[in-house]
Image (cartoon, rainbow, N blue to C red; front, top):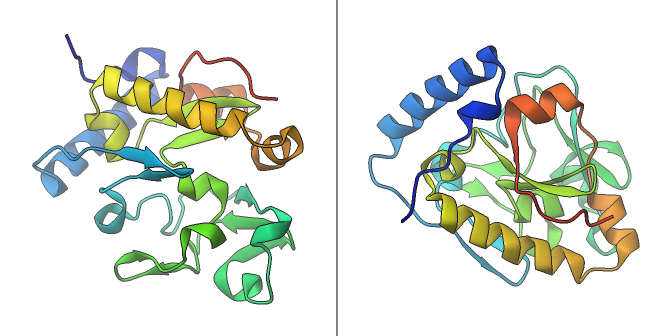
Length: 188
């Protein structure tokens, strides 16, 4: 039997209140449950075009890094992203330059891997689910874990150097508050 993802049990008290506030906000914006899918290295997250939480202006003052592989860097990269360096796009209080009125304006091939697999996030070499995303909050647990296994298998098929490059680093506290460990084997 399916159950809705339970994320509050691993959060701090502040994290639980934050999740409850977002669940209420997203329930008002998305009265009907939408389903995610995965194909060709891209999670289809139908909440993204209306939500824009993760790619809009960020609350945190520290930029959220998103590595780009050599194949994703072009002459237009500096126009598509705020950059920490030539191979690292970043989200910060300005949001993302690629965000348009209908969501991301970039083809999947130009988006950071972090965007293409969202709400799954490769952190410290392990795959996590970002708890605040409406897709995560409203997903059935077996659906979210099954999709996570598909994303994990796809990431495992990439060269290890690429996986290491796209894996981000987060603190233990940030992981506890914002991410659900899917319990899958480390990728790097």
